[in-house]
Image (cartoon, rainbow, N blue to C red; front, top):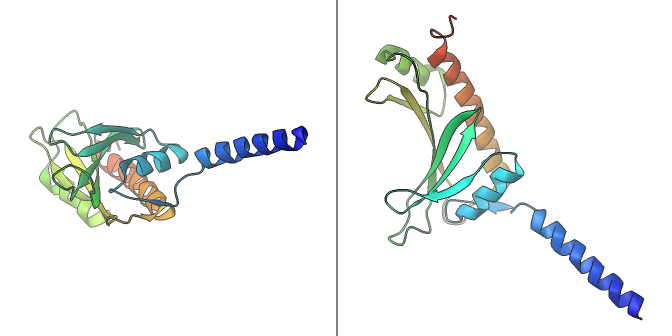
Length: 164
């Protein structure tokens, strides 16, 4: 009888361990921790912080470039957010011209581009998750697509500096 009870305790410990490692099935801006968990399970660095206005922000990297995931549509308590914006800046040695930056918008489907006051290009990519979230597979696909976009934009932004 004691052996059976011990087996039950061990089995419940394994189930608890397995569920602690299981990523959430739905993630969204309403639950920043769910996004961090999904990112970490996908091999991404994810540090949850708070921005200057009090809203959540995740510091991460896409394709080796420092990036942020900013939360939007948050309520007055800075919770229950409903959308995200992936943001990455490209620190060039020299200012980039506007025509080259605009070319990104012609070649990259989802990203928006702008130049900061030093002439460095930045891209952003919006994702609406609503207050119920999206399947983790949808979020993972968006992260992979964004990382691919960061690669493509880096190739364009640094081509001249790399002698290409």
